[in-house]
Length: 441
Ligand code: LLP
Image (cartoon, rainbow, N blue to C red; front, side):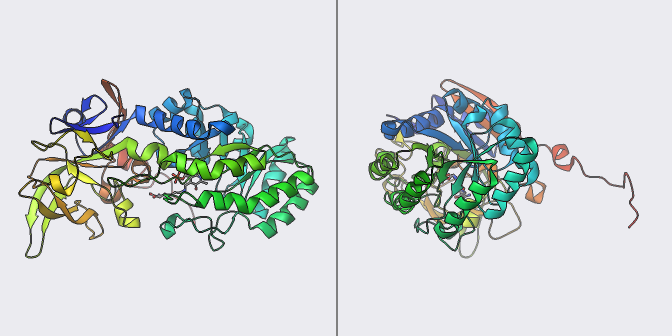
């Protein structure tokens, strides 16, 4: 099947729309999302794990655009959240509270109150202190708080160290020994209902056996909980399924499922999963325009109008994002990341060039690619930065007083602006030139 983003007649399309048309309408930089991709990926996980009827809780942090959340809520997805703000977003988008899970090492009292009030499915508890606080708040509200214990299984996800969360040196989860003590405490506390066990070992995991190893580590603990008569219902296996950032990369979700399914079945629990990037990553591109082509003694720079404030992944994680001009005469048809992808060295054209693709921000870390071989480009040309649907817009900032770009959702033959480009007025809202009130120190 053709992927959402594909080239046809030498031009990049999102579903049935040439992306250049969208750039004309909303300007650049902007994010363009394929709604169909998001919904299809939710379904792909449901299909791969159909034997255990998983609840797919989409990780809101990867892309929290309300329009997309709404599409996923309508497709029956649940949501994985990490703040009051994300719970609010999910609910605004039509999420069922009973399909929301709430993780994070630093949940605050106000957030716990809010989540309890809304009736979420469960808190993924990350420490003993958090247990105490949730119990205290639940007691005050005279309710029983539904919780899962997030176990740190000490498994190496073999990914970038900033997005590795399942090793004992990471701040996440509770180690198995302490988790035993937690069971005693949960017994004593009364206001907590232990409904699940949660693990999430990291993100952009490309080896299909890592999740399985993590599940293996918690299976004996699950047995212990059952023996102690805790009302366990769910095994939340987290997210982290890696995607293709380059042609030919990525792992089929069924490969993960093959390893994980027998172990989940062995647990006897219902499966919850929290994929973010797998659903959103290749559902979005960031479009940007070449402002200047600049030559130095050493290099050729493509200076584009997008910058690290719009997409910070290359800067923070030295992440690779495929980049290609939106129009290239004579380029053959095919999906961007598919086996038929035309975006290969063989198709760079005869006057290919090596560029640093950089933004206008005043830092040398402001780049999308260094020393990248690309078709020769000219000022004014549109460029697509691919696989930008996950952790792109959600990590954008206003550094250099740059407004965040528009976000556009494509739905078949139509598209709409799901978030306006920020104006300078938006950026200074809340700031003052002079005091409104002066406090005595
Ligand atoms: N569940 C929990 C508890 C998480 O912490 C995360 C991501 C997910 C699920 C979703 O993981 P995914 O399926 O998207 O891999 N900003 C980084 C990624 C940070 C991931 C943080 N946690 C990046 O741009 O690569």
